[in-house]
Length: 127
Image 1 (cartoon, rainbow, N blue to C red):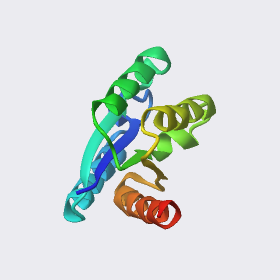
Image 2 (tube, rainbow, N blue to C red; image 1 turned 135 degrees about the vertical axis):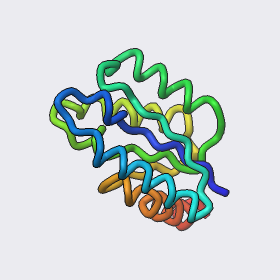
Image 3 (tube, one colour; image 1 turned 90 degrees about the vertical axis):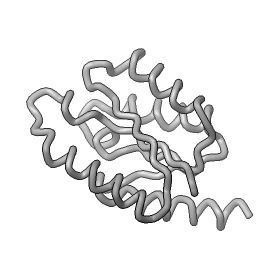
């Protein structure tokens, strides 16, 4: 069973944002991971902890065990003013999980599908 670390914002911590649709998408995505036989660990970042605290939390999770794939969620990539955070996350994954495939999603509900694609791409290029 491939191990996957999914990194994203905790939707309940984003000011002025209705967390319900994203929280439901995360739950749907977690069910899809299980259906596909993927082991998912969630690492949800508190929006108020951007910077050192969030980065330290992510590094701690990346060091806990070997992951086959690390997924970086759309909210971390798409929001205005988040490019530096996104760049930092990609580099943290590269430095702490160099063997892991890196995946990105369109929405929380399609995360598992993108993880499978990233793992397949990795197989093609690493073998």
